Length: 488
Length: 46
Image 1 (tube, each protein chain N blue to C red):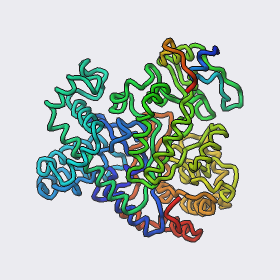
Image 2 (cartoon, rainbow over the protein chains, first blue to last red):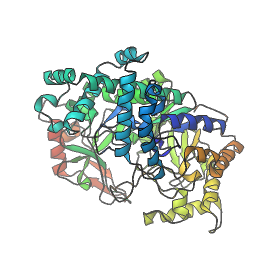
Image 3 (tube, helix red, strand yellow):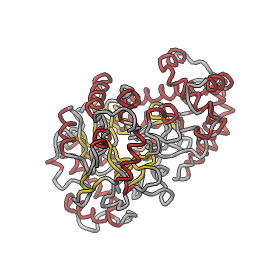
Image 4 (cartoon, helix red, strand yellow):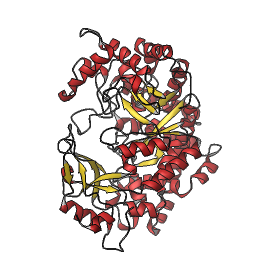
C-alpha cells in the first residue's frame, strides 16, 4: 500500500500515520494480517518536496509528510490557530494529485505552532538520547538545508561534512530548528508505533537514497565517487536504467561494518513484523554507471554478500522480523537458493509467473503486481500506457477464465481469488485493484510524463472501508482461509 | 578484463536479457577502478 495515497477526509492532502492506524484497524477486522507499506524515509524539508519514496534523503528517519498534525500532543493548545491551516490542507484532498509542496508548507507552519506550545513532551529527552549522534546530525542537516538550500555539495566547504567545527557552530546557531527536527522525528516515531499496534506492518527498505540528501552527506566517505546505480538493458528498457542513487564502495562499506545497511534494516524493522528488501540482488552485486556514460555502458560490481547476509539475519533475529527479498527480474538461481537457505521469503507475481499460484513456493509472498507494474484495471481496460504490457491481458484471461466484457473490478476479484489459493505464506491484495484504479503508482523510466508517486486513491479511506471491491477481496481471502495466521 | 579488476570486484561479463553474454565496457571498468581507488593497496575480492 502506498501510504501517501491513502487519504481520509481529515488528511492534510496526503495519507498519514493516523490514516494508517485507522485503516489498519479496519483491515484487521476484515481478516487481513499485514499491511505492506512503501518506504517511509525522510525527505529534505525544502521545496520542491521530493515525492519518490525510493529517493529519500534518509532511510533511517521518517518522512514528515506522514505526520497526523492533530494527533501531535500540544495541538489542542493551538486549535484555533490550526483551523485555517487545516481548512487549506483538507481542501487539497479534492485533487487526486498530491500537492507535496503545499502539504509541506501547511504542515510545517502547523508543526511550528505546536512545537512552540509543547516543545518538551514526556519521553522526548530519553528518545533523543537513544537516537544518538545520527539524530543530532540529521536534525542539523535539515536545519542547514532550510537555511542554505538542499544541495549540500554547494554549501560552504566547512559544512559539507557532518563532523566539521563549522557544522558544530551552525548547530549552535540553529539550535531551535535542530531541536524542532528532533522533536518532529520523535512524534513521527510515536505515531508509527501506534499504527503498528493496530496491524502488523511490512516496511520496505529501498536500494539507496538521494545523492543530495542526509544519508549521502553522512556516509559520503563510504560512497563510490562518480558512480550511479541502475540496471542493464532489458526487454522494457532497451537503453538500461539510471536510478540516480549513489552506490557504496563495497570495500569501505565492509570496513565500516556495513553500518549504513545495518541502520537501514534496523530502522525499517523497528515497528514492523517484516521488512521487504527492494532489489535484493544489491546484497550480491550492483550495476554501476560512471559519470558521463549511459546505462547501457555500466558494469556490475560485487559486494560483500556473506557479511551483508549475516547482518541481515542478525537484524532479523534482533527485531523478530521476517525478511522478504524482492527478487524480481534477472536474479541468479544461486542468489535465490542462498536467500531461501537463510529463511528469506521470495516474491512471486501473477504478472510474471507462468505457473498457477497453487504451484508457487511456500516460502514466498504472492501478489498480482507491484507499484512499478500495471494494475488489473489498467491491463483489462487496456489503458495501461506501456502498450507492450497489454499482452498481460492474456494472463488475466488464463487465470480468471472470464469473458472479455467482464467489468475490471470483477476480474480483479477473480485474480485475487486465484492469488488466495497460492501456496505462498503471504499474499498481498492491492488497494488499486480493489478500487478498479487504472493508473499504477509509478511508471519506471519516466519523470514528468506521469504523476509518479503523487496520485492519491480515488476514494477517501472512509469510502474505501465501505467499498464493495475491498470487502469482496476480503471475503475471497477469508474463504480461502488466508487470514488465519498473523505471522509469516 | 585483467586480474586487477576481478580482484576489485568488477564482474567481467553478464548474461543480457536476450541470453547473450555482455562483456564489461573497458572504459567503464577503468572508471570503476579509479572510483574504488584501485591504485591503493591491492585487495582480495569483497
